[in-house]
Length: 99
Image (cartoon, rainbow, N blue to C red; front, side, top):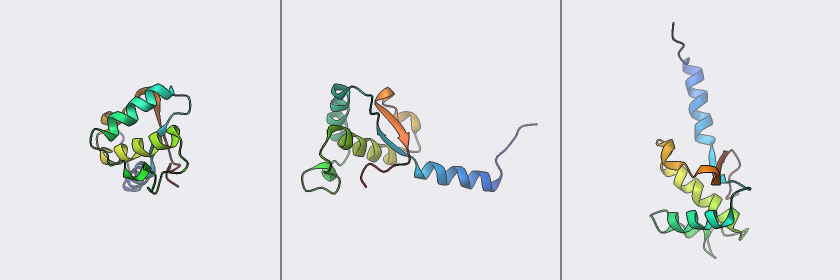
């Protein structure tokens, strides 16, 4: 007999997934992170928040900026998890990169 999620289990899964955040992997190659950042910001992700007067500009590091952009992209395409695959350059966490 196949197991199914109870309604409480399904709700818990939805809450957990909505709390998930995509960030840069601290072990990722900086050149690869820069390439992803340039590609995403030039490909439709609104990167104003990581600009000098943006809410997520500080700390002004490549790692933090890529984390914010990965997460923006992830939130836009969360229903399509494969679209958010940046290989070993990114990881999923619950720590918001913009806080």
